[in-house]
Length: 91
Figure 1: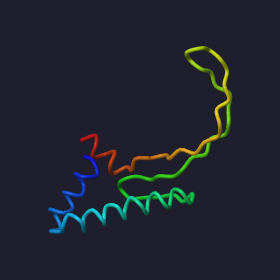
Figure 2: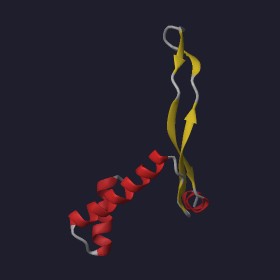
Figure 3: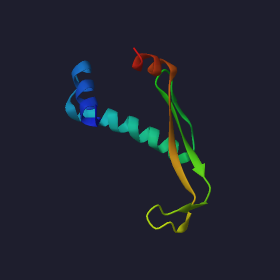
Figure 4: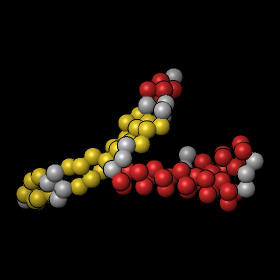
């Protein structure tokens, strides 16, 4: 399922116009993104928890040349599946 599929499902199930359903889905994703950018944790009970992990700089190796390189510090989103979703996926 992609974003367009989600919009269509919402539109059909709630009898909404396409533009209204798009605004709702966009608002949902924008709020999650804004919370993560602020460093907040996002938890949707039964589905998932998300937060941003910070990684320090480290020395890595270029696999092609074997040359050592310094990898810059970075922030990456972390997604943890909820128990209910995990149970449903394993049925």
